Length: 286
Image 1: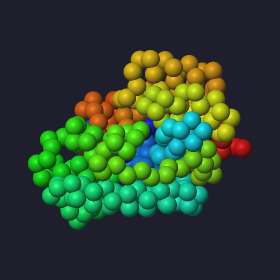
Image 2: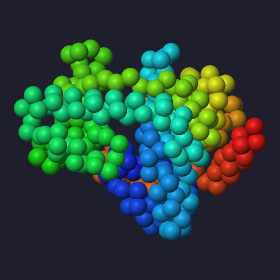
Image 3: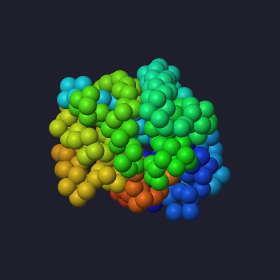
Image 4: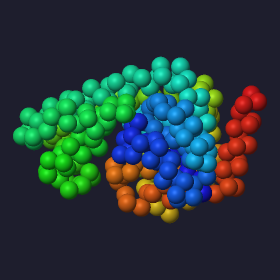
């Protein structure tokens, strides 16, 4: 099996790098892309662990971007990127810092609303990662008995991205994401293959033609949040624009939105994986 979209506790998965790769091995995954949010931290370690366990680790990233022309979010996967590449660090480093600062503000708002949690409790849940995510905050609230799940009514009450101030969650703090065209550019600078992640989630389909002209090389067809209609739409666009078709579980462990997104659950198959490898060779020759 092949899984081209997976996270670790370097970003917002509850499992460590080693635990994730061991799970992949147990599920029969032979090729696993580690695509933590906005960082290449841990990729060299992952490659070494993968070699020991017999799982090929594809060094990757998922950049949290924004389509400023259409006013919506967009996530761009980078596959086969160079770990620790300076272009990635220069673009994504400020976002990682802003996310951590925004999380501190969120915890402060939650405390002011009467919830008994501390920044220290939340921060301890991500000590091996790049900073606090909303999932870590929810985990701390779960530990205190305020909820029985990461995603649910309390998550919406706290973090809903409403259109107006009255509709927003009581702890919602916005951050400025990376321009999607910059995300595509730096992935290529880092030797990687830019792929549009889960276009159905943010309804990015109308932008793919433009982004393909800017260097996008692939589109994620198989994803836990995609229904049959999304898959057909993504496949049709991929075939029209000669984009690589990918798929992945978007595995987040305990922090996942669905119990069905286990590692290897959205394997794209070797036909498309071989096309990815061929595209990689072509790009390296340019």
